Image 1 (tube, rainbow, N blue to C red):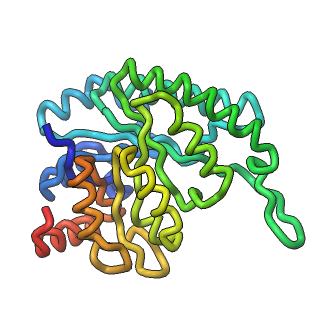
Image 2 (image 1 turned 45 degrees about the vertical axis):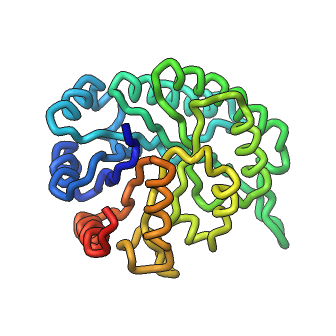
Amino acid sequence: MSKFALGMPTLIELPELEANIELCRRLGLSFVELNMNCPAYNPQSLPAKRLRQLTKETSVGFTLHLPEEIDLASFQPSIRQGHFSCCKEAIAWAGEAGISIVNLHLNSGVYFSLPDQRVWLYEKYKNEFLSALKQAFDELLKLGQSEGVTVCIENQGNFGKSFIREALENLLAMDADWLGLTWDVGHDAESGCSEQVVFEQLQERISHMHIHDWDGTRAHQVLFSGKVDVAAMLELAKQLDVGMVIETKTIESLAESVRRLDEHGMR
């Protein structure tokens, strides 16, 4: 069964889940990415059984994006443990809801501003950083396997940092089929395609994609309005047989992106 499908993000204009689902269906898309930064999309607010029932009733599926602030390597044990517990709870919730993809970022942490440079603390204390991440992912991936959930690390313009790249390589070297990559091609374009080489070298680990255009100033623009090679990225998603979120953030821009895909015969 093919995994390739086009989806949409949860929109701030549509606070109700049902409204997002209805728009998804109206646009002929297949799934909605639930964003846990929104209060409505967390285990306490949204029962997993309800998500399963909605999928059964509407044929709209879901993926999940963990909160942006997740930091599994914080040097403060209580903060690190809280974020780790959030990830575990979310993965278990996703599994119960029938969600097979959970996205998160590798947090770059904080930096000290010196007169002539920035010093990233995770680079300065790299051994502690790498050890904390490995310990966290070791348990999260075991949970992902038991729940049928692939945990995907998504780029956010920081894969060019040496300590993030080393962490990524270490994690992907783990013997785990439940760790993948999410390639956000819009943010990659925003970084001058500095992350593209990583995804080309690790193409077999790409499990999910996000697409939006970058016009040279701002990301999350309508498709075919900027510098992203939409046709090539869509073809890659089909070749890899992975889902792709059209990550424009308004009803109008999402509908226009879908219209342009249809105009180009790319769905």
